[in-house]
Picture 1 (tube, rainbow, N blue to C red):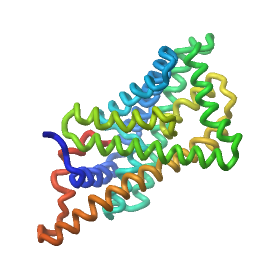
Picture 2: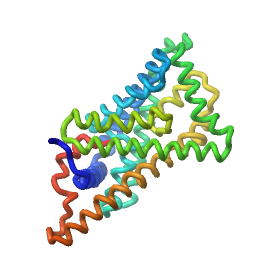
Picture 3: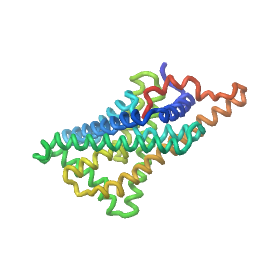
Picture 4: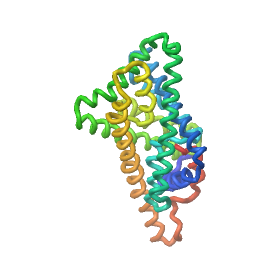
Length: 290
């Protein structure tokens, strides 16, 4: 039995948030760049499967492979940090400026990784711009335009739609982080992390780090999208939505139902000042750097 109870997972998330802020900028950059690129790999795999089968749900089913890699390798993904760092902040183990500094570095690293893979993928599929890239490039262009100018056609409603899809997306992504921490075995982590990622990708919700690849790749491929369109119509509202989804619907919700209540229960039975949610956090935090 390798299942970890929610109270232990809540404690592990708090400890993971603390541990993240102890990493050097060099480690955050390296791990963040790798995460951004690996999510790009997963996106092109999903798009390839969609083109080959004509079934987007097949692409959604295999996309979580990239997230699983990030979890098992202990890399840094800002959308996952949108839950674990606020958990530590809510427990008063982390200051706001320290949290913001960490998120800024990881966001920047994810951006570099996503754009790096976008460039390398475009160069590889177009033979350094000599070919059009075929059906996969056409799908990337279509996706990039759907994520930007299609929202722009609806003005403020489009912006809020991107924001809301960002909230829904990271609610599931951070649930994947939680379920990955609920098991101490590799197989349990893989299954736990897989399910919520499949749910978000299959419904077309908006993930900030995925978009750091797919929209630049679309621009490189000739999509009718400007760099300003990318940020104003997608990256900014989606990132804000991802933060709300992770910080409120996962971090705050789990903290106040499992963290605070468990702390109160311990106080009543006289188990001492250390809440049970901090018991043995190292058992479930090592692969949870996302």
